[in-house]
Amino acid sequence: MKLFTLFDEPDLTRRLNSEVSSALVRKAQDHNQVETTLKMKSKALGRLKFIKLHLLHKEFSGHPTHISRMLVASGRYAKRSLKLMKIRFWESQ
Amino acid sequence: MKDEFQQPFRIHQYHYSVSSSDGISYQMFFIQSALAHAGISGSVFATRLNDISSPKAFKLDFEKMWDCDLLLIHHSLGNPSLKQLNHLEIPKALIYHNITPAQFFPHDPTLSALSELGRKQLQILKKDTIAAFTGSKFNFEELKKHLFHQPQLLPLLDIPEDLKEVKKKKQNSKKGAPKNLLFVGCLTPHKNQNQLIKTFYYLKKLLPKHSKLYLVGSQDPVFLSYLNLLIKQLNLNLEIKLTGRVTRKILEQHYEMADAFVCLSKHEGFCIPLVEAMSRQVPVFYLTTPGVKETMGNSGVALHTEDPFEVAQIIYTVLENPKALSAILRSQHRRLIELGREHNVDRVQKVLLKLVKQVRSTPYFQINRRESEQFITA
Image (tube, rainbow over all chains, first blue to last red; front, side, top):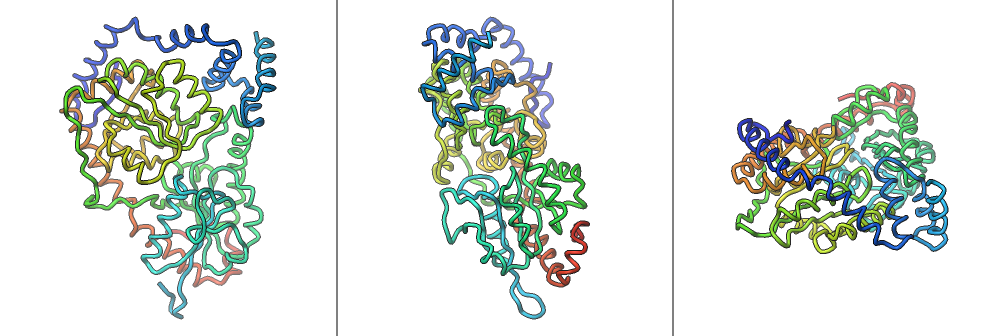
């Protein structure tokens, strides 16, 4: 699979693509490290921070929760907003 | 520049907001300076002035706007002042800048509504303007979709054809030297900085110690909050710098020390920072979204994946290969020359001078009668 193109350099593109592909196969076990790290770290977070990260993550990965609208309205993460977020979060479970 | 009765031409410009660092303001001041060189005066007006003041730009004032031959209305997101502006009985032309689709603002109902309003207002502008211009072919197609008759391309910036002004950048070829990655653009969901942060998480393990990612640009508060949490959770506090809005001098310093410019934007009309990076000899890695592809042409490194793990490996492999780096810089130099043929001062002067001469030679009631047809063409 062609992962990238260097223009006017078909041989170099082919060679580097295959170099990248082999490196990716070699390190395949690291592929989802970002998601694993986020999940693992989230467990250690305080409840409210965890909810905030969870909701923001959902919001910006194509599953809008509409929670952050409140954040825009309030201008900052006021205690009241967090309370509402908490309620909405448990409702969504 | 004057007409046959020795009356100097004057062209004013308007956009809802003007600041010292956004792309639209950049083009407004570029047009103003290009016209000034041709002897055409004119002022910049805005409903909202951010970090800028008179005489560089003026607050919207209908009394001051009357004395011109033509008003260039720059249009992007919805403009709450458009109705009042349309009451001004002076010939107007549209300069269309891309409107980011509402789907990219799920977290902000205001921006989402302004995005929809912006598109609706194109219909009003179609009726009330005598010509339509835009800076890229991507936007040009969008104007055609909205049934604008014969829109024209108008340069967004000046790229000297001989590229004499291209600054030669010292490449940091020392093995083991830390690398600096850069992206310039406001922190918003469609610019996809979250993906850049995840990419850097993998790159940190590949690149030399103390390598950094700089994200330069103004910030959407909710998205910023998300990015900050992401950076904290991925333990990248020391390596990723969110600079906020910076001055031109500091921006130049960022380009100067950058080893790569990485753009994973999901939506762009035309991306001026890519041109700036190319002209400062910084290798550009980019996702091939339409506006970005149009800016880059056949140059730089076109990414066919947005998976952070894969992008990180690509960036590392290419940066480690001197042959690849010189091939990229060669292709970018060639692209700059191509862009220079479309984006230059001469073209701005030629296009707008022709328009303003036509306006002056046409009685206003005739302009009015024919305005729905956008009668003036290149």
